[in-house]
Length: 266
Image 1 (cartoon, rainbow, N blue to C red):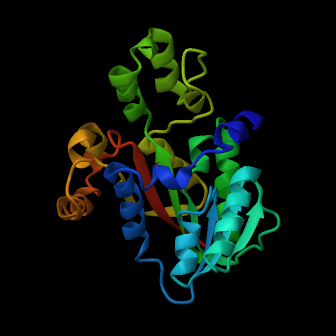
Image 2 (cartoon, rainbow, N blue to C red):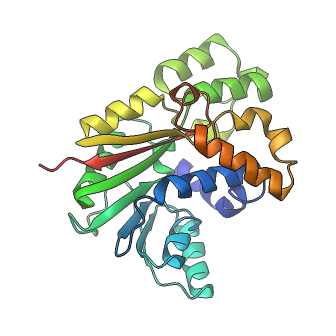
């Protein structure tokens, strides 16, 4: 856990989601997918809120918002930004796997857009889903993001050929982990899933799948083109992407996947 906190201390998550069109597409796609569930009077909680790119946006849109973040440095930034922007939301330092300070059956929408990237064991992943189930109201909706291990293997081939070894690729394929000193610390603290694994995890946790989208589609592979679009071209391409991101064949190839599911009442 300390390695994970160190990885994200001083990290600029907001910049990652805005500095290039290819990253902006991740944010725009996620917000477009969530808009169906962002209805009046909805209570939203984000587990793993980082510096608040999404939580602050939910609060700005007028929703009753709670943000939970593990890394103290990120929590401080989030609190400062909320104050600077005059936004009211509930902010907590905490672990997505255990949020006892959040009341059961209290929220309509639970958004988890980062923690699954780092939960190395099945037990921890199940704990996060169990907590999401607990804090959601009956028929509440969970939105959970993951990074595809198939995309990560392709990234190694393109950018990190030193990681294209039988040991690294077989471990990645079998476990979703990259525990080699040859890799950047981001990969060492990461967990990379398959679309099927995430669907199985959610279903076993008491949810029924609503929608499963390829957040980036194949756009990361053509990033040099996308990042050089004009604003008008980006909007045109985004509109095309939003019409195709539900295509199942894109899921494994996409950098990020986003699964939406509804709580099945006990």
